[in-house]
Length: 340
Image (cartoon, helix red, strand yellow):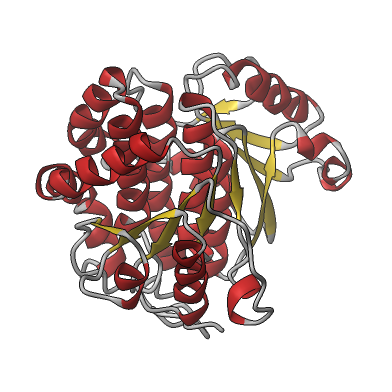
């Protein structure tokens, strides 16, 4: 019997197409507000998988719009009552449920300070939508598995579509329209060799650079959530500044490399770790020592990075079941976490 998680992974291409069609008016309105505001900076407000989506969007905005983006700790508003001066900027708050008290409190504070605040949520109406000046329905549809998959992907797609509207990026718009087709291919890919080689490993590293670092972070979280397996995400460059000391022979490393300016350096580091005897896999055709993982090249560096998460989701769902676990109901976790 198919798990909810596997079913929801399979629904991602359709969910993305639905978002691009049904939320286009709201995305255009929010993009217009950003053009009119011309923010000097942006902040993101999120936790968990949503925070990884925010990290992806951060890189996309900095690379495309040239505005610095910072992640705000929601407790600044909910616990500390800090009065941040955000009037010259914009805020993007991401929450699937739309009701975590600390996320809502920080979004309310951003709006009150004069920022253009935009909510990306799977639940309308919701407190997060009311707290912001613009609300985008990410249109992921019901998500029953505790581990977020399609809501993570759709949050990022919504952020990229918002960015394309803001800066009038025709290439990014076109790449997004092609995404459902690319995702149909990516969702069918299998990482069987990685599953076979992991064996009884108890820990592994997930590496990436730029937007792919957000994918590595999400992948590490999913290993912990679904498989009770320790996984840590690092920048493919940062791993050399200390964490590499733990990389011994057969230590597993997965490198998420997109077709972008960072691919060469990510591949170089992956090959170097493989030369040391580590068990290294990477999503690239440019490897010399590390092993290749199947991927779909989308023709755009941002959507290319995002497409890497789909075959990983399929892999980790199957890995969890192979370990006798239920990826739909991870131990000690619940679907909606409400923090103050």
